[in-house]
Length: 120
Image 1 (cartoon, rainbow, N blue to C red):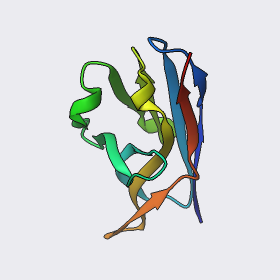
Image 2 (image 1 turned 90 degrees about the vertical axis):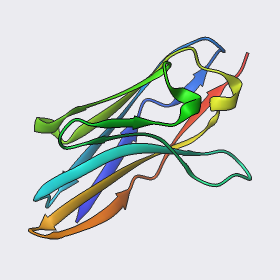
Image 3 (image 1 turned 90 degrees about the horizontal axis):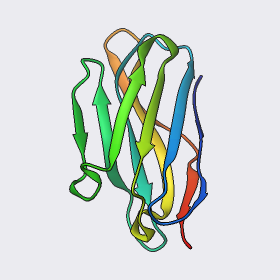
Image 4 (image 1 turned 60 degrees about the horizontal axis):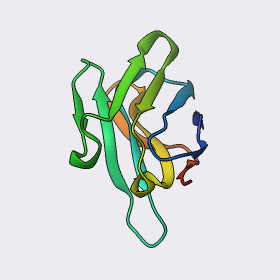
């Protein structure tokens, strides 16, 4: 059983910062990549940022220069540092991990989500 547990969401004013964390636990053999997606009401879930086991990162154009994704491989944890937040960043943020519980069989796993609200 694999669990992804997010933390760090909340209410912040425009221009403020938040840091999200996601820890993966359970019977994990290896992690290929971890990332963050977000979904606003009425919208589809979209990629925000992703980091591979090799450290390569990708970002949505809307967050480049404002958000930074990092990882602690020893703790199976990924972080999303969010700065200069805008009301348009308001959404439920979901952690995603592509990992193997046995060699050669990778699957995608999701956290339950954490709400980020940017409002004055």
